[in-house]
Image 1 (cartoon, rainbow, N blue to C red):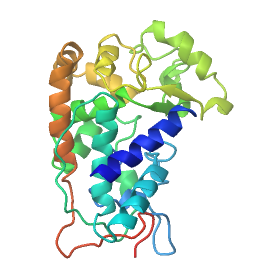
Image 2 (spheres, one colour; image 1 turned 90 degrees about the vertical axis):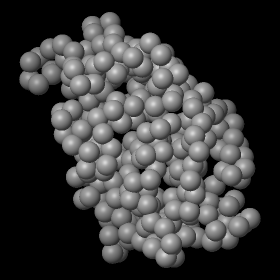
Image 3 (spheres, one colour; image 1 turned 180 degrees about the vertical axis):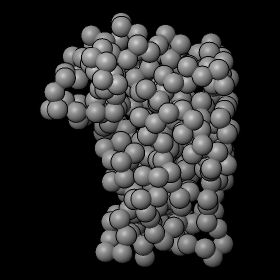
Length: 286
C-alpha cells in the first residue's frame, strides 16, 4: 500500500526534524489484531489505551490517524484500521533497517475494546518470564516467539518508572539489581535519579542504536545491560538464553525469525467476512 508507506515517510521526515518520536503500537494487542487498541473510551467501554501495559508506552496513534485519513480520501470504507496497523508495523520496521514481510490483507475492525482484558493479557516489564510465556501461549504463540518479538525493543524508549526499581533498591535490598551490569548504572541513574519526578523520563531500550532495527538488543542482554527486567530475564532461563546468544551473533537469523513471528502475531484473533466492520475513523466505531 503506497499510501501507507508515503504517509509514514512524511511523518518520519517531520519527526526527525523534531524529536525522533516513532510509532510503537504493533505489539500492544490483547483481544487480537482487530485494531481494538485504537478505540477511544466511550460511555459503553473503557478501551485499551490507558491499560497499564499501554499507558505512555503504546504511542503513534496520530500516525495511524493520518494514514487512515489519506486512505479514506482515496478508497472510502475499503481498508480497515487493523490492516493499516499491520502494514504500518511492517513499514516502520523496514524503514528502520529491519526485515520486510508479506502482510495478508482482509482484516476487519473490532466493535469494542477492554481495558481490563488488556491489563490481564498483555505482558508487563515487572512480570516473571513464566507469566509472560503463559500469555504468549494463550494467544497461540510459543516461547521462541517470546524471544523473537522481545527483539522489537531494539527500537524505542521506556519510562524510568518501568525499570527504576533495578537501579537503587532492587527488591528492598538497598542495592541495584545484580543481573544489571554495573557499567550501565551511571548513565541510567543520570537519566533516572531516585526521585518521583523522574518517573516519566525516557531511556533508550537499546542505547547504542535506539532508532535502528538491529540485533544489538540481544548483544546488550548477553552483556547484562538489558534495560527492562523482563528483557534481561531472557538470559537467565536456559529455555531462552541459547536463542538470545544466537541472535546476538547472527542478525540475519533474527531478522528472518522476526518476520515469521510478526506474521503469526498479525493473524491472532482477526475478524473477516461479515464480522466487525471497516471503521471510518480508527478511534471510533461507525
